[in-house]
Length: 154
Image (cartoon, rainbow, N blue to C red; front, side, top):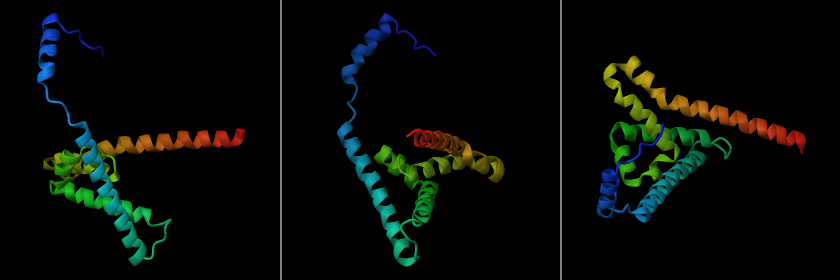
């Protein structure tokens, strides 16, 4: 898909409005993303410490229940409309952790809940997740093969 050329009038208009457009507050956006992303990670660490202390997990096994709990919390917050507000405030700080993935999957399912449980929620639940799972599996295969070949040669 090629980019359409602007007419001289369109180019002139673009140049005239450029000084009038607000400048994005990059530093503020980075700070908000850093703080919210860090807070999500700190909550995850707190959940991990909770499981280590009270449920007899060890360092190797605590990751799965911690991630599952973060996904559950993010899905619930998405269902109640809270996570969208967090996302509007924090931007990438709320999208990058696993909670952002849970938000995306839950949002896709909730968008189509009027179509019913099976045809609406269930079919749209994995619309985004399917692509992520396929990408993850293919990436893991490629990295695994590269590692195998690297170990074989060196």
